[in-house]
Image (cartoon, rainbow, N blue to C red; front, top):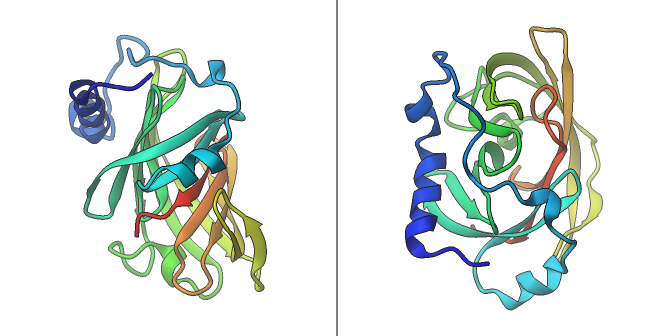
Length: 223
């Protein structure tokens, strides 16, 4: 099912204004889960490689708990890219997941800080183990809002590995991001970055405590 231009603009406004609308990084209450349709778990596996090859637009393959499909680039704002799927939207900044709308537990806002430069993400400049902070706000499946800041450590294997993506196979460095949260929870994600420029080509794992497993990879690049 395709979305009309009006519905697409509305969905992008919901994601793009998530922080301003809720004020969740400052704390707020919720009247319940997001009204957006939650259909990831109802989706059947698709041949995203063939779909991506048939489309000229930039695209990514997104999976939530193993279900999902192809997401197409809807718009860009600076370093943020907005991606539209069947009934969900997500935002990447510097290739790093920052927001979602339309899944059972939505990520409302993300801020990465404490690296060598807040303007340049640590995964693009790191030479050894990168240490920084990640502040995230999210809405759990019961509608409750949460905000926490985790200490982060990103460590990469020294040698690139062959990584098969939707449309090509690349030699990428596999890295593990470990987040230690104030409530003693620990979450980990794996990302695959270019050894040449540090761009993230794929990422998978749990991005906040009790989050679903989210995985995405670049199909057709947007840069």
